[in-house]
Image 1 (cartoon, one colour):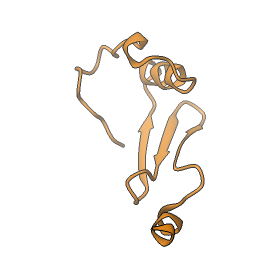
Image 2 (image 1 turned 180 degrees about the vertical axis):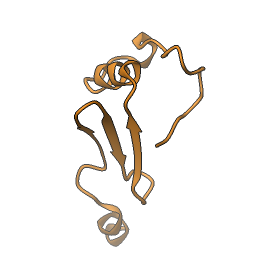
Image 3 (image 1 turned 45 degrees about the vertical axis):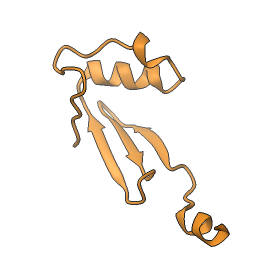
Length: 73
């Protein structure tokens, strides 16, 4: 079990990176690196509010999406 944990460990498995006019989520929780980029201001606002553990139901759904829709970039 310990060996399995050691192989699956990666520092900062899920983090965000703020760039000039975009935010990128880098996620390794499933083993491989997945990157999600958003340059729309409404997405950036939602990501910013969730970064500090806001309850998900307190975050408005951006007008350009529907509940359950996931956009990857």
